[in-house]
Length: 139
Image (cartoon, rainbow, N blue to C red):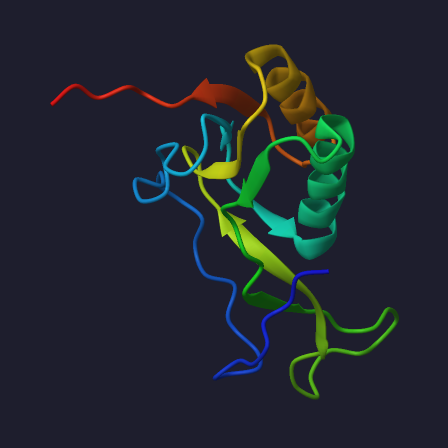
């Protein structure tokens, strides 16, 4: 499971998820990518489940990059607890994902295998995604 090694502040506020991601919206490392179409908090468990689905499908062929990291601590108060008495303990870590963000990248496999692997990974995620290819830039 992905968790930060250390945090400057243990508990964070909820923040906003509005807007699109412009940084991290291009396929930079691999040939193919999986792009987020909506915003969400993606938990470390969801990222790990998608990673396992990807690696199992490509069977050690090709290289995979995870482009999101769960660095936001999400706290939760226990059930049937009265209001007040401060903020609850950290329950899990989440990555803040906005539309346009590339979640996973893959290279070293053919297009059909990459598409199938990304489809399996997308089923593990809480948002709709899109399969994208690297754009070839001419100098």
